[in-house]
Image (cartoon, rainbow, N blue to C red; front, side, top):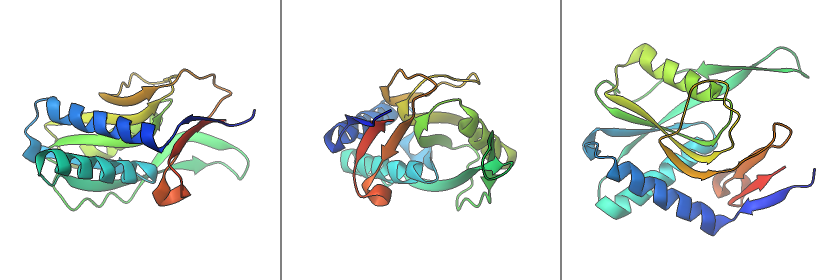
Amino acid sequence: MKEKVLFDEEAILRMITRISHEILEKGDDIEEIVLVGIKTRGIYLAKRIKEKIRNIEGINIAVEVLDITFYRDDLSIENNDPLVNNVNFKLNLTNKVVVIIDDVLYTGRTVRAAIGAIIEQYRPKAIRLAILIDRGHRELPIRADYVGKNIPTSRKENVKVQLTEVDNVDRVILM
């Protein structure tokens, strides 16, 4: 299948702005919010949301990083079970409102791994989920609290978020 650009830099900026406002409007104490970006693109989305919230409210929200990869059975077959690597948060997330941030929500397995890693070490007041693109096809009962865009896809299609910090371009493509 040929790739198709679904969203450009301007559309991604609008999504980040909307998600940032929705996080602020949820009613949580802003001083208790910690953004946890899932490596790789979730980190950069978290930093952009942090900056947008700083511009709106003048408050610096903490950002933490969570590294989740996938087990490999061999070089050609990828198992869908995520592996959390080295949880080394600078902050204590107990009694914080943790907002997990990632680029694409698909089966829910990455988010489940992230939640598991957080609650294994901490007792947050709440865990919320912010996703730039929700493409459906959940295998677990996980739903995002904040969504940039819902994109109906088939299982044969793939949604890729590209960000300037990694890919030298801001866009979302369907492949």
